[in-house]
Image (cartoon, rainbow over all chains, first blue to last red; front, side):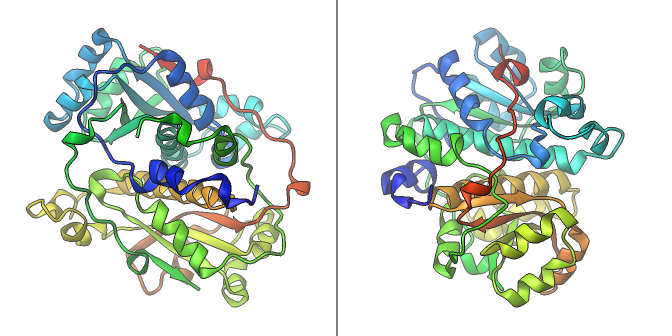
Length: 198
Length: 198
């Protein structure tokens, strides 16, 4: 597991250096089995105490896309409606009801979280999960367009009616990006801006 | 960018399927240049409006590790003290002071965030950043041990005194894990548990 050569320079480009946030999409669908493959990779990433609070709705059909449309900020409508799929990344406020499944060796791990203020933990671990979705999608050859500009309460009510303890965090458009329509890449902060080694 | 073959099955194992949260470390250092290489990849991942609120302190020297020790929860002391490096993932509450640098084409993007409640956005985007650090470290052949069990206010005061607008989110031990000391992998929730396709 310590052989860095497993990941080629070309793979680092695909995952990090050349990957871009896309707003325009080629007319090429994303299958159910590919959405499932994304989750099967992303689920393996670490979350606090293996709690896995992330829940996802993949919006793929034209009918479901239409239900999403009115909740999007103006600047996010066209890219979302044209994306082959949109992953709504949410978290389950009652994630602790699954502690027996995700932490089977612990004695009553539910009490670590039940009745507590878990907001930071749920946002953090569902955001980690969303990042794993982005990296998994890229690893499988897809492009991503993450977004937070939408009516989150509206999307929660519209798409999580069957899971009333869920709250939406952010969304990720998924598909094959039209590289010809990319804008120039925005700057990143430097190592010295962000990091200290002590 | 749509050729999934760039990422081999072996690479997917390294990044996702076989990667584990490590608690015991081989006696093999992590150099400053490797820490920098992690950031140079992780910085490329997307954050809301390219805000990049994440700030990092890499704790590497024995002296700095000693300063960290008393803030760790009991179960996190040994693994942290023995790790070659520990990344403290924080966010800068005044991240919007850099909007001119990260969003140079926008007219006064600072006002999108200054004076607003940005807590969700900062936790979300710094957690995304932390996940990119995990994935980048793995891509470079390292193992990770993310943790949230510590006195966050204490670590903030101890390691961000020079950046008083920063708040600690979580930490990641970095090094070459001792696979012989891994416990069995904990279960993951299934696709049907977590996901819907509509």
